[in-house]
Image 1 (tube, one colour):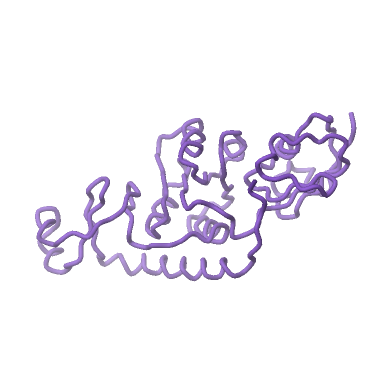
Image 2: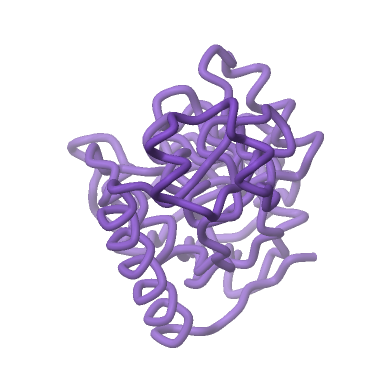
Length: 251
């Protein structure tokens, strides 16, 4: 079987099996093997890949899964540029509950279901064209997943920074329910009088209600800590929006 040299971006080599974390690699590749198959067989989900080039011929993203290697001798694998294009809708796997709350705090359209299995997550991402955020390489490698990102950090603050750096999403803090993710709407204090403690009603006058689950929100004593998260996120997005630039072939 012909040998194919695979030149992998240094920022992607951590995904390779131990003992093969070097570049270029030489792999067996038949003429009918696709570029996407070769990359994913090495442990790199295509969601992490920007440009793929066969002997310096660019393979558009839409063709990466089905473009045959043919007689090419070199496959160049580049990481995705940042900030990465996206439609502003995200879906998080079951292990990212804390991240889901923080993203919703920032007003990011974030879907999350604690009991969703991998099949449901993949279909959900495809149906609503959401970016799937997960720590599971195998989940991102499913062909039906339209887009996604692998999160490598354990700490939620680091996970959020990774999302902000990679996507630079539009922020609208304090506009979404932390529990279900639906939009909040302003509501008069009198209309929530029976749902909050009398002391809360005396202390605060600005309330909001979730348009989905009906939960009532107000800026309580805990809001100072949350405001710190919001300001950090705004600064992070500003920096990521101007740090790198660039683009990628989407079609």
